[in-house]
View 1 (cartoon, rainbow, N blue to C red):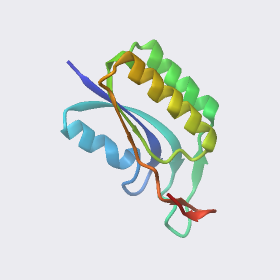
View 2 (cartoon, rainbow, N blue to C red):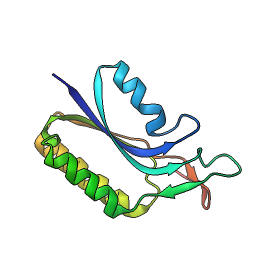
View 3 (tube, helix red, strand yellow):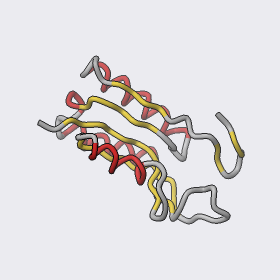
Amino acid sequence: MSRYVLTIQSHVAYGFVGNSAAVFPLQLLGFSPIVVNTVEFSNHTGHPTFRGQVFTAELIRDIILGIRERGLIPKIEGLLSGYLGDASIGKIVLELATEIKAANPNAVWLCDPVMGDTDTGVFV
């Protein structure tokens, strides 16, 4: 029987941050990651340049609807959230965490607060 963790955070083509770093270790630990990417960037934003885009809240909601339609929400043991790219996605993650916890009271939410962004600098 599969053990599921939903991981909702950034993805980069080059480097290892966000979902690019989380998926393989989750698989090594025996989990089946359910991956929702909030952004698709060429590399993390700590480099002098990066390319790509932040996904819209509408797209994220649509992907989560598809996950819900597969009946996966009650099977999720953990939620891993990280870089969201847009504040409106934060509300979606909070709603998702509430829904997962209601469906599975033993589920755990691990939140990476992300330490900064390109326009505002370092924050916690």
